[in-house]
Length: 198
Image (cartoon, rainbow, N blue to C red; front, side):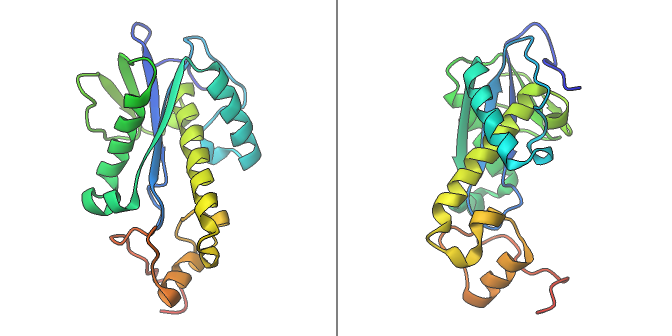
């Protein structure tokens, strides 16, 4: 069972990102402040949920959260500052967009660049432990998926409508056959020794 809060005294926001491992598209992040006693029987790490459930949960999260925000960092920025720093920057941008300023942050993962003077705690697999991080994971994932579906029509041969930019064998093979688009991350490794074409 997920927990509502990491600490009880300060206004707490959960943060998570989506798209770190992709070959194309931005990295998205979300920050969510939930009511102190929030509970939901279905809410969990977005990777553990099917697409329909994620989108239903998104509506509930946006309705019930005290504050929420989603932000992104482009593939060009990722190439400039690397994906780890880009993930932190996306979280910072999401926190900055919140309608109320959090007093404490809980971050999915084991590393984070401090946001202003706001205290934070990094929590490995936090999206499966705290509702606010799980909520952030759902928002980041669904908004990123929406973006990838929108641009999929520009380059249908890459199958972004289904792989969302992740390094599937088909996506890798297509890059090697016809090259990169303006949405690809040029600093990411495309080759996979398990593919038969190498």
